[in-house]
Length: 121
Image (cartoon, rainbow, N blue to C red; front, top):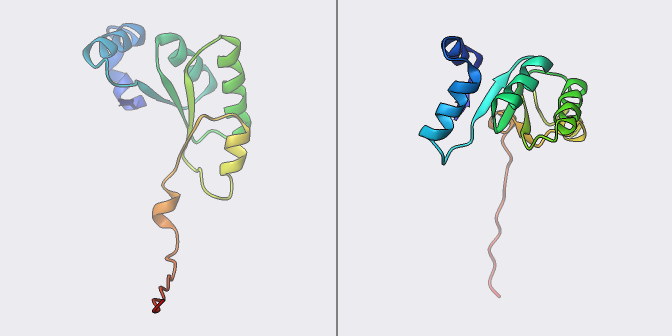
């Protein structure tokens, strides 16, 4: 279940921790993914009970910093890098420690011409 920043605007009343706890009870079969835009939001999401923090458009250096901070917290939260991940920089995000790379790049790849030859044995 992906929770965007726009969704979190509706959590102010009960707070993120209680909202995530409620989601986990209501949908125990689902992982809770929180999309964030900063280092501090990533730490808060991890402390609040997110299963995955999805780092939106953060550079590999910031991804590495988040991964290191969550490791210091002995957190089992996974880190997903999203927004701007493509074939040219995917290795950088992987080296930064992202557990998951989120990309739409394959949908925009150029077509490949494939030829098949069949012959008698």
